[in-house]
Image 1: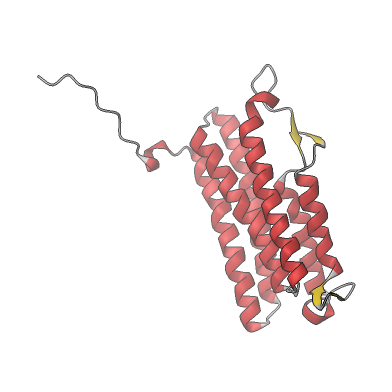
Image 2: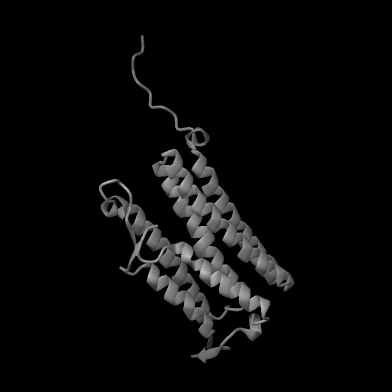
Amino acid sequence: MNTSQHPKRFSMIREFHLADWFTLGNAVCGVGALFSSMTYLETGDVVHVYFAAALVLAALIFDVLDGRIARWRQKSSAMGRELDSLADVISFGVAPAIIAYGCGMQGLFDRIVLAYFVACGVSRLARYNVTAETLSGDDGKVKYFEGTPIPTSIVLVALLALAAFTGAVRENLWFGKVLIGGFTLHPLVLIFAVSGSLMISRIRIPKL
């Protein structure tokens, strides 16, 4: 008789908690925002910028709900935490950067700044994942964030939606453009540099 113990096979779907499905909703909205941004690049119809911004807002709602549901049901997992970070990278890192690119921040220096912003977001989430236990209080809950949370990029998306509404996109971007060494920089892109820098800063933000 074979008494050897075989490791239990990991069933991804069975391991999902209710909160994880909301996290996937976050990711799906982020991908939808990317599609809308690409459609705007192709068609020039500004309504797709609004769609992209609305989908990032929907992603934020899913992001808030998944945390509340996990606390309500008192069910969380390492996989859920990883899912949350990956979804946030798409919705609040890559999507805002691509929306900005679609709105006209397409110069070489613009691309460098936008890539820096995404890299800061990825680094911010990685730092949170590895330090969550250290930052936890006696009740096991994280009391504060180090650096601004990546979903704060919704503010940047709102500004881009406002710019689109006022016609300040592409060649009409606020603050115009400057040439540095023959390459283009739109000063408006610097808000992404500031946002990214705040994400990787040591500023303590109380967690509500």
